[in-house]
Length: 398
Ligand SMILES: Cc1cc2nc3c(=O)[nH]c(=O)nc-3n(C[C@H](O)[C@H](O)[C@H](O)COP(=O)(O)OP(=O)(O)OC[C@H]3O[C@@H](n4cnc5c(N)ncnc54)[C@H](O)[C@@H]3O)c2cc1C
Image 1 (tube, rainbow, N blue to C red):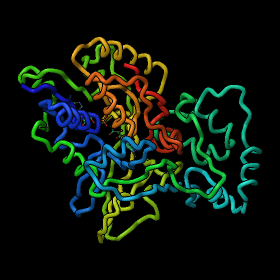
Image 2: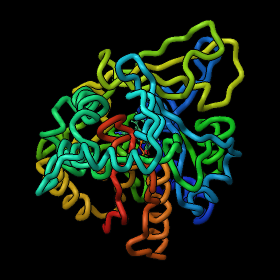
Image 3: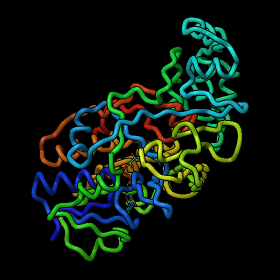
Image 4: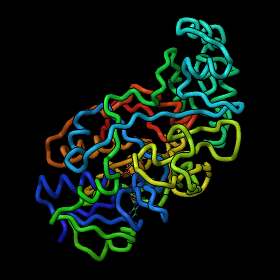
């Protein structure tokens, strides 16, 4: 008999399995319907031997020392500062918009002070900030909005920013300095031997059994267990009885080239050209030495694996109905991004899972602060990239 059935071997499931097994001596069965552990953070070697992230680039960054301390039990790290360029009119400029971007694009030689004045002169006045378009044009004006934000957002979300909630680009990350780091978090580092190796270490315990290629619905009535940690889609748990929660998806196209490096930085965004949004070269992230290099092109899709919850009021209301059911379901903890219909970064899921463990143990922590970035978050997630968490100052209070 297992004490816990953990559905999903991503960050949420793996952290809770590890904590419950090692700290509470519980017997755990972890089930995942994919053929690997690690969830969306899974990495592996492709046919050429290049380490790739199967579900798109995952860059680890956090302001939480607690999260770093916890994960450091399972991995060493390599320092990595993420840098992104945007291709606009055949030129590459740094993102977030900074002094270098504007001077490159316009052939100017502004100082920081002059750039501040420039932004102020082009910003449009808005009485009310309602949409994502309002957020951006009220900060950097229409021209930069059109060049860098509008089309990227349309590709990423399939709708115009004027139809997207303001929360999507809640804060426009512009800098008047030359700082071209994508994030400004205190800790910016990648697992030295990759994410999958880290997950293997987390799950390597005599109390933990892992069953892959198995949907939990296939075994839920066959295997005896006590409680459930559920990290799959919350609507699916309840057979989508109120309808499906909408997600935006991605298709990934990988390409290996017979050259050491293809682009100057890990990620190049293409706001206006091509059907893909961005191109990632993994070796910048992983630090791997290899004669070849592998890139991934991201094509946003309406259908496919659930990646980004679509931030619209009607979807929040629909999630609210599922959440009410989840709260009223005894013996099941709903944890992680799919089970709480929130775009969380990896560090936020780790923090949420550690807090859930404390709650299960009766050491309840109310309003535990999730790691909050002080960096380029919202445009990354919504206007430009789409892989970033909305600012969520506190844990879901369930
Ligand atoms: C394209 C992309 C880029 C990202 N980039 C970053 C980044 O740069 N930095 C960052 O911090 N975060 C990033 N993230 C977010 C990161 O992926 C998540 O925070 C993290 O993976 C969430 O972990 P999780 O355990 O909640 O969910 P998941 O990793 O999705 O794991 C859930 C697991 O549950 C399994 N499952 C679901 N239903 C069932 C079922 N019925 N039976 C069995 N198994 C089931 C799934 O197969 C999956 O493996 C990115 C996400 C995406 C999509």
